[in-house]
Length: 179
Ligand SMILES: Cc1cc2nc3c(=O)[nH]c(=O)nc-3n(C[C@H](O)[C@H](O)[C@H](O)COP(=O)(O)O)c2cc1C
Image 1: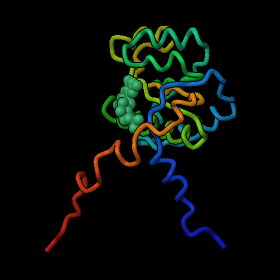
Image 2 (image 1 turned 135 degrees about the vertical axis):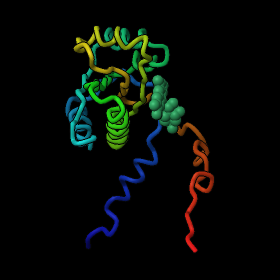
Image 3 (image 1 turned 60 degrees about the horizontal axis):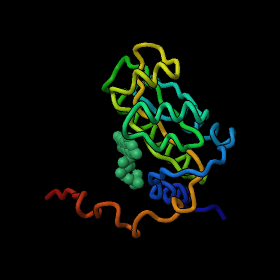
């Protein structure tokens, strides 16, 4: 019999996407990174411009240098890999939306594959340093990275009581009624 709700496991995975910032030193196999990047590649973007390139960083010294360039991306220093999302920079307003879409898909794909992941937002003051480090051409926007790796045992435990980390649906949804 065909499964009447084949998408349910995906929805469960999506509800479980949380930031996990402590990683074991084990490498992430290339095959898994490629699967994640394939999901990223298929992200829809404004006018299908696909205004991104992805830089996969695995060298510990480079991960450490990125962490040092911006105050809130410390987790990348301990990651097994990071995907740095480089936006073309031609249409900033649309690309900001595209950047969010592609980032979320990377997080969902990583979670589906049993990997820990966390966003790092490189503050504008650190973007030039990270761009230079990674050889990003002038004019492109380097802002978002995703740290990846296998979670430490402690990081594998639930971060909060079930349901506690988000406001209840009733607080954020209103079903419009028409008379
Ligand atoms: C636009 C944006 C920027 C973020 N920047 C960072 C960041 O620089 N460093 C970080 O550790 N987490 C960052 N996060 C992750 C959020 O802090 C996190 O998703 C939020 O606190 C909810 O926690 P959870 O992902 O564990 O559910 C960012 C998330 C978003 C959407």
